[in-house]
Amino acid sequence: MKRAILFRCREDRAIHCFTCSFKCELRPGETGKCGVRSNIGGDLIQNYYGIISKVALKKGVSIGLTDDEGMWCVVGTVGCNFKCPSCRYGDFAYENLLDYRNREITLPDKLIEDMKIKGIKKVAFGFNEPFIQIEYVIDTLSIAKREGFETAILTNGFFTKDAFELVNPYVDRYVVYVKAFTSHSFKLYTGNTWRSDLVFENILVLKDRNCRFDIATILVSGVNDSVFEIRSVARWILFNLGSDFVWHIYPFKPTNRFFVYPPMSRDKILKALDIAVSEGLTRIYLH
Ligand code: SF4
Image (cartoon, rainbow, N blue to C red):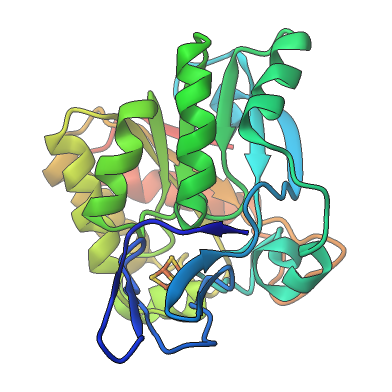
């Protein structure tokens, strides 16, 4: 547990959190949509500070970091502001958070020290949404930068400008996972919001601030794989970021836990490529 940042107390002891775009208003005893930030006695508390759900070594390009063949240590925490039915990490993102509540805490200096011992010099937060664990992300990445690490955040893009400003000094690269374009598909994908516009707004913030970032999309059958969806994202990238901006496209692959959607076929992925190229994009990475 740790006192959270980025909130305002109201006179009636309700709390307004402005870490992510949901901007929850929480009465005493209530927890935000992320499942990890609670109003406890008129204070906003981060209930899962330092609890690590998953750590994996991944090649940069495999997680959407264009042109990076190096190995990154990707760290997952607990909770998420979205409830995507297709999420491979639903267990610690939104389903079974209480199972993680009493797990051992890994303090940021220990996490980075362990990586140094193993010769790792690139660290990313991903799997679940990093911004909802902003306290731990800042504490960790600030140490990582001091130690000469490269750093990255793999995000769903649903963060506030305030959160971005606090995290950005410690982040070298971002990958924004664009779930869908239309509000209907976005709601279908995320399970709890139709505000895709806020993600695209945030991508423009990254652009305006000259951040190094990539865009990635996991195509899910019947959710975000229509011609209109793919064309719309491709056009948005073309008009806002340019024809040579890289778009990483991944096929949805069901895990043993999730049978909500069928696996995405290679034919459909190739069709998505055709659509994006016909719209004028020149750098599509198929995964
Ligand atoms: S991080 Fe987002 S979902 Fe969580 S309490 Fe704050 S505004 Fe709500």
